[in-house]
Image 1 (cartoon, helix red, strand yellow):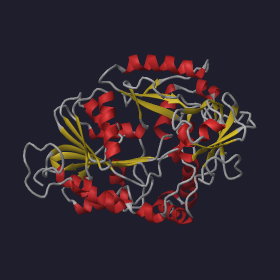
Image 2 (spheres, helix red, strand yellow):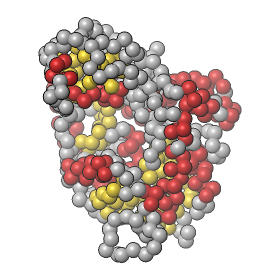
Image 3 (cartoon, helix red, strand yellow):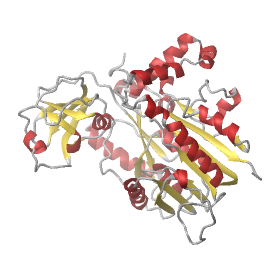
Length: 469
């Protein structure tokens, strides 16, 4: 049984998804009962965090073994005697995996309550403490040093500064208040800093606040797979079209041993600033980040050779990563999805515009990897079917490593094409949650297998642009 309720969608979005996951191709292949069971399992898993915290090691600065030792010591300090292993992945040799313990169902709830926003709540479920901007409401007489129970307002209905809240709230665990109510909500009070230090979270994950910042990058497992699938080589010119906040950008540069050129673009200036900060923190010099709209990145006329930024001439990149803007339905944990159906449907045409530009910017013989962190057919397999029909000189390629499942039926792709795609589907996991005893009784191979499945929902397709086109 799920500890949290299944993810909530607007009625129109739920109806749309129900049709997607009960499409004729899928039901013919699996049967109606199995298709429905997988869909319900997916909805349940989306509201819970993944079974592992994944961190990518900055191998540009240190070895995995060295960072693993430092991280294990840090986690021992944080968990105060609870022995949780740090695992190396046999196929993704630059990541470390830390099992998530929970949900812990024996925690005593305290009378003093703190209500946080949904996004803050999701961060807490993945190991974060509560920072002041995330606090919406506290009990009337809360003082610094009080033991408090923290809840998430998943529907966004709690009013800031309320003294009590009777709406839908989800218990996240217990903590110690660093500030009083009056300090948090005073007009002259702190606008940032820690508000609640979590001591008994429902899901026990390590906090990475200022932990080995130049050696580690918090990144979901499928997001790490993407860069390996693109497989950039030293000396090549790579384009990361929608790059913020720079996790994949910095990974690409690391895989290239900081030799070559990684062009990173995003159309929001603050996000581009974040890419540059991450590149600097990880001491990577081959990254050049630009604030630019990827749909306009193709130059319509000859440009000056000295110009290093966008727009770019056709066929000017060896490899391109299009980690496209998407509806984000694969992100976990998420208990309430606020987008309307109109917003969900708006991504497909944008993705196609970006994809068309990417194809034109790619050299003949070059590799294009398309990815999203969502679960719909329209943004994933349907985009592959459209791309293969629109650009006959594109060819689907086998992915290495191939850790996720094959593509989903329903877009008219052949079975051999679906096998070339990579869809990470949390519904593939049969168990939900892990306690210390189960962790201690598990073999490492089984834990790695669980980590490969119990992650965010994600999709990857790899294409090659045939020569002479």
